Amino acid sequence: MFETRRGAAPERSFGVRKSTPEIREGLLEVVRFCLVGAASAAVDAATLYALTEYAGIFYLTSSIAAFVASYAVSFWFQKRWTFRSRGMKNVGRQLCWHLSLQLFNLALNTAFLALLVEVLHLWYIAAQLITNVPIAAWTFIATRWIFTRLSPDGSLP
Image (cartoon, rainbow, N blue to C red; front, top):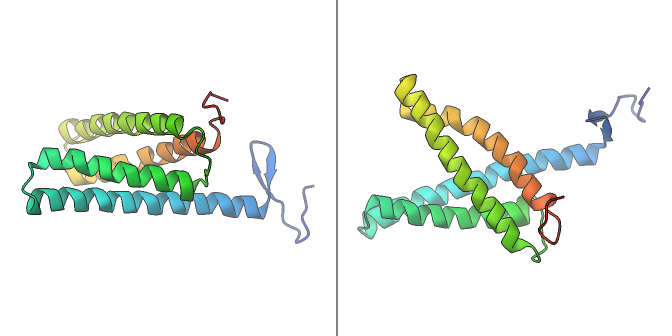
């Protein structure tokens, strides 16, 4: 019924046909999102370690500075590279939405982590890895919306 030149039916998403380039770009977005997330995590860990071990700053203070540094990396590269949002007109609103998302995720992560460790008695590292998967999926969807669907004037679509 929906034959293509090669005889295969195209992918469908919510009743809309997706072309191969659209599918490829969607997969590349996921890969770029994961790479930026890994880079952001590396900046977080390196900043925390350097400030605590070499600068002699209290680890909780270092942790806050590390969050700020990794957040800056995450926001900029998710906006510009992952989702190719080049406009600067609504960057302030995107920043507010994105920061709100990250703070919500921090609270969500803490709640899930406490549940898995304190109630289910999982090792905290395993619990963190388990928690990361659904939060990363949710964050991808929400971040994509922030950088691709937020209208130029910053209002909701």
